[in-house]
Image 1 (cartoon, helix red, strand yellow):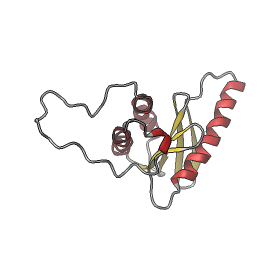
Image 2 (tube, helix red, strand yellow):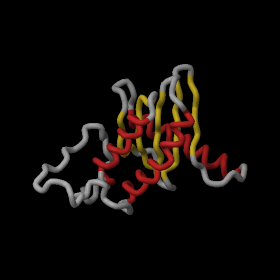
Image 3 (cartoon, helix red, strand yellow):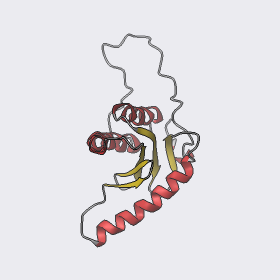
Length: 158
């Protein structure tokens, strides 16, 4: 899995949607994969509670015959928490402030989820591969500081 590409996807979503305050990606079992969160948020606890909610949401969509679970949003007095399925094995958590444009968030998150799924499974093209017109000898990108508390079992091939 390309941790740098994952961090870039999370960061780009945050940059493109004003109001996003925090993001995280977790395995469906609640193990944290990557986080870009404030110091006041425990990303491992966030991943665990999001996975529990994912299980309930998936069950609710199944029982009500609404198809595969895609997303859920929880509103609080100071913003929202959006939870998105990333295939069958992971989820993305996006926290936003009161002014976030939810429609824009959903619109821009959908394509990002596909790219994140490809990064997690290693099935997509390498987004860090050399581009033919890129200057030869350019230094490799430095590891992204936004990725934290990576699941050790998900670091094969890194």
